[in-house]
Length: 66
Image 1 (cartoon, helix red, strand yellow):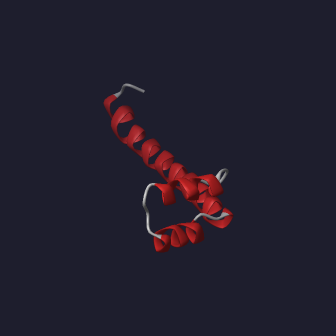
Image 2 (cartoon, one colour; image 1 turned 45 degrees about the vertical axis):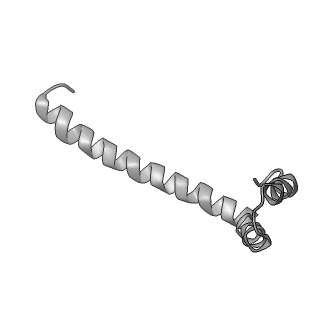
């Protein structure tokens, strides 16, 4: 969507989407939005790693597996 925004917008117009929807979508598809999504995914991955590490310690070390 970010690389081929113009052709994507043309294709959804051809599919019958309303002009209001297309205009709103164009305002949402921007570089700051993409950067925000990447940062959010990274932060979520870090949080998930810490949760996984805590669960690993709690379950496997307690059981004597590791």
